[in-house]
Image 1 (cartoon, one colour):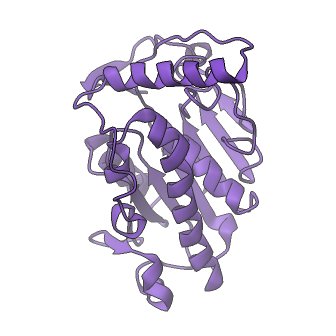
Image 2 (cartoon, one colour; image 1 turned 135 degrees about the vertical axis):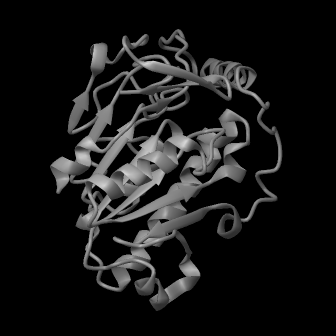
Image 3 (tube, helix red, strand yellow; image 1 turned 45 degrees about the vertical axis):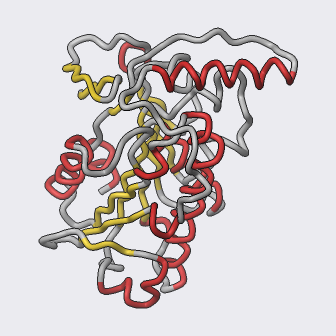
Length: 274
């Protein structure tokens, strides 16, 4: 089962830009972070929103939609479901939750296709899509510093709800793209590394390891799940450069550009599908 799940992945990343690192004083670090974040804001369309974080309500702005094995449609699940959640998720089967990246949402074609491919090649699992689109429209610095921990907290509470009704966290796999890769890492960290697997696809580097490493408490590490696979296609650029997974898959050494890949322009970034 796990081998099948490891093959049912695709890469979704923004176009890769190099940034300079180095040892800096604290005030200079904050200035450099702001410059990096502002640059990222400038290359996406439509431009991200500089304000609005405080007005959003997590319970309304973070949605998890799941489909049972053999199910016909996705159903929204929430912390308010309580025991009723057992009617929306097959507790006898593993669960995979897919989390999108910055400026994106779970309705984009690549995420819908990934969910469908999981269901086709690993049919006996629950598949969920975590959507944090209202928060994903905020500026990169807000998203990286405030939104990522918030969404991770929401997801960890959801998984704790499953555990309360005796669902084994070892049956959980989390898939995250870009900032979603950092979200799934912090989710696993909050659960003490008890979840079964994390698949981080180009986990975001800017403001996590670029221009400085924020440290293992604040980013994805190999200890956030029993198994952590990192797939990297733009190391030391928009992706984390260090080898931080239990296993690290590095096509072309993990560096941009990737040969023989189909590239599509999406909100100023690229989709690279292997």
